[in-house]
Length: 212
Image 1: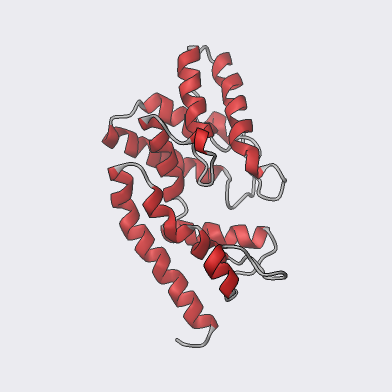
Image 2: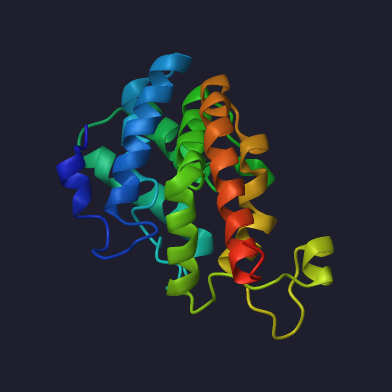
């Protein structure tokens, strides 16, 4: 079984969005959810440690395929550790199925995959979610806040020249995350985190517009 210390070497230093601190939080939350939902803890923990192990840098151009690359890397690591092929495949399914904007064929089918998906998505809500979303925007050279265009509000697509600020990401993705969660345990945790994140962006918009 891979350990947290071993996993540290698989992640880039200084990545405020998908770095090792994200892995530690997902690992702890996934362990908590696995216990509550009756999932196999070893499958869930291995998947949590490996799920962003390759191509997680949003500026690398590989982000869209990072779940596939990380799945392949997990196969090599677990094979070297002597895992049974069926259990390796279970971990790989969890990793392939953890993307929010994933393909239909990679929807989480097992309770372990649902637990990893939920643990990963809870990390974009609440105070951590606000911090990570702003960090992601800064990494990508985008502003923290910009008023979305009518086109974006209706379609999720920016006007030509329109920035995709952290507020855009909240409107497009983060405010919908709680409705995508699979497990009862995660949905309960998400209620407070979602409320906090919504209040944060409401306050941010009001301050930017000198309304508060």
